[in-house]
Image (tube, rainbow, N blue to C red; front, side, top):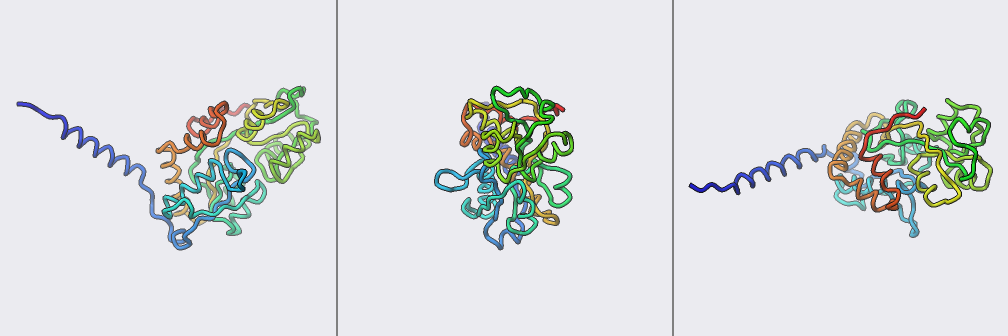
Length: 277
């Protein structure tokens, strides 16, 4: 008697497909989002590769593509999302003030922020670092004592130095571009920001280098208003699906030069490192 494995293989294939579909299932889209017909996303416009404006003035970046993907899953089209440029200082007020429906804006999860807004499950981890001139005598964070440090208003880095190293003189700027210019003009001895942002700067500036001492390691997540649990849970499920479908890898490869892709892939796909300090 001959026996065919074909029906068994077909059945197993259908079972695997059903399991995958079940794993990727999203909850119902909140009624208010469906009724609005568009998602208003707050994103960064000066922080490649996460959020920036390209040569045509269009929004681009990993977090911008995340927002477009949410719009496609929730409302059927990647075009059903509008973007508002937010800064480190104004992004939470923009959300609380109903100027945007969601923040996908390099937003670190902190206890201070958790008191006023809600967060989805994290989609990546982030660390901070410090950029100095290539010939600087500053070799580690402790060497910043008595120095002038450029940072952003409302950033987690500004808060960290305020709490841990108040003897450092911080110049708090409105944007990453302003902080970087302050550093390059010599008005600051160093510039601190997300390591992901500084990796790009250092790779393109032969006169600058990173200290390479990660600090203020935290999770990055999508921010939503309090009492919008259904929207928060929908976005958390969307993040799980993005990871499941390995979408972050493609987005990183689209926006990050090949020589520094490894760092960005690690923050989306690997566990958080231990805090150096």
